Length: 368
Ligand code: 6CS
Image (cartoon, rainbow, N blue to C red; front, side, top):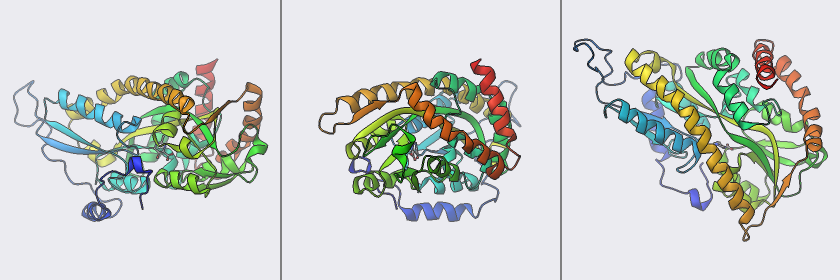
């Protein structure tokens, strides 16, 4: 069931429509329907585009105005221009096609062609993808983190291959900003998390990361989070500042700790078989747009995170105490977080932590 705060209660396609889409696409692993029109160039004069009119669905986990949705809308605009109006992409905001997990399934089935996906919702399926739940792994600088996400072979090649085994092809990894904690009591030391009811996404390693601080994590969709925070079912959560502000979590929380304990990473993904079946011309158009969008989305998240920090600080109706952790305080959390990397290597990874080893080397090289 999708329950947003009133502000985000919009007309979404009914669950019936979702069931129809899922049923129409069959069970996991089936070939996606052929996309109309992309015939790959036969019978056209040299230099002339062979692209026929076609429509793709691009699902996101966020709503209009938020970074993921705006990304999909900008992507659609660019593809429309590049293809001379032949390729229409319909961006879907979150809630239109079910939960985050339903959306993953839709992409795998070919029910949608494209998706922005948070690895935190595929942790039970692509074990290696839980790497993004490891706190204090990426550099403190969001810009540096984005550079690593752009160039990392560990992520763009090795981790991407793990997703491809599940019919999901990641085309890019990008940050939505540093993640911060909101809470109903001040969070400054790991001891403050003792028995704290913390909301996480479904990644088991996210839960493990909070258990390392002594917290009691509960996984849930963000659509239920406002109400859960309001009722005290959970006492805190983590997210980038723009998301905290736009989803109004600050209304039902008293504190926001600027911890930058992680970066919120999202992936631009496509259905693997569908993408592989496209002509080279269309593939290059997508790839070019994906590359261009890395800069665009970096600026977009920064703009939104800066804007919402001000909004939250200046909201006198719903006052939030903003706590900035000192380096020493962050270090205390980092010490507790480091052993979770061993857990990832030994208990989570299916390749003995090789992707993490490589990523750590890449991060070291990029920050030295
Ligand atoms: O906390 C969440 O689950 C949501 N947070 C963001 C930044 N994007 C979508 C995601 O589902």
